[in-house]
Every structure is written in structure tokens, then in C-alpha cells.
Length: 207
Image 1 (cartoon, rainbow, N blue to C red):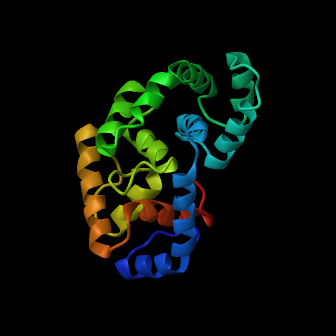
Image 2: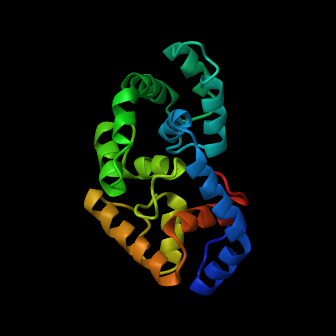
């Protein structure tokens, strides 16, 4: 299925049956992360917009080795790994300074409300990045969706949506609801569907 989109529910379910065990293991891993590791995933999701996920994770690993969060050193690490590296360096510094405030919000069990708070209060996070972060720390519980390009392409291919673009915040919520309803209809949890679409396009289950 590498680099292919799903055109039928039957093919989707078939691929899910083949990959379900690995996908569920990945989701269990997200849920097993310690609170200390939340920060790593928080930084990762700040870097991923319009950038390669693997390269972004490499950058996070290098940044975490630094004794101090110095913008010039972070910029150097990001320079060849992510787009808009200067902007993202500044955002990482701000995120580090605000982490204690953000961390307190993570106790909110209303994941829809928590996701929206992150999108409104974290510089560099929108609804997509906030959803991504919460999924990666096991706090999405199939209640929110990461409407990334690979998701939108597949939803259009499966005729769940007509356009593979998000016009505004209201439209994000509308597409998210359609995605959640579709997941419920085919009896595949939405968190699993995200990783399923990703693995079909990339050949691996990552973040």
C-alpha cells in the first residue's frame, strides 16, 4: 500500500486487519509515556508543520542533549532538519518558558476542550498540531482528530469529504466530526485510522 490512498472501505478494513496489532502497540506506547516525556513530544509537534517527521524527531533528540536552551544552538540544530527553522527556534524557547503553565492544563480530561486551549494559547500550535501532541501522549482517546494532509487525501478518496483542504476553524470541526463518524461507522478507532493512513503512505508506523 506504500504511497497509495484508500478508495474503498473494504481495502481500508483489510489493511487495518493486517496492521492492527502494530498500530495498537504504538498507541499503547504513547499512553505509557511518563509526564517527563510529554515535553519531548510537545517540542516535536512544534517542529513538524511542513517538515519531515523523522528529521524533526532527530532534532528533538539533539536539542534535549543541550545543557541550556540557547536559541543560536537550537537554530543550528534545526537548520538542516526543518523548514522555517528560525521561527521554530524562537517558538521552542517560548515553549520552554511556558511549559509549566501548559503542563498544568494537561490534567483536563475533556480532550476536546484541552486541544482547543492548546491551539489558542501555544504559539505555533493550531488545531492539527494540538491534536497531534495529545495523541502522542495518549490524551486523545479517539475524541479528536489530526487533520493532516495524509488524512484529508484519504478522506476525499473515500468520499467522506469533497475537498482536501481546511478553510477555517469551523470547517476543521466539521471535517473532524465527519472523520469521527466515519471511524465509528467502520468500527476502527480514529487514533488507529490516523496511524493506518500514515503507514499506508510511508510504509512505517511512526508518530
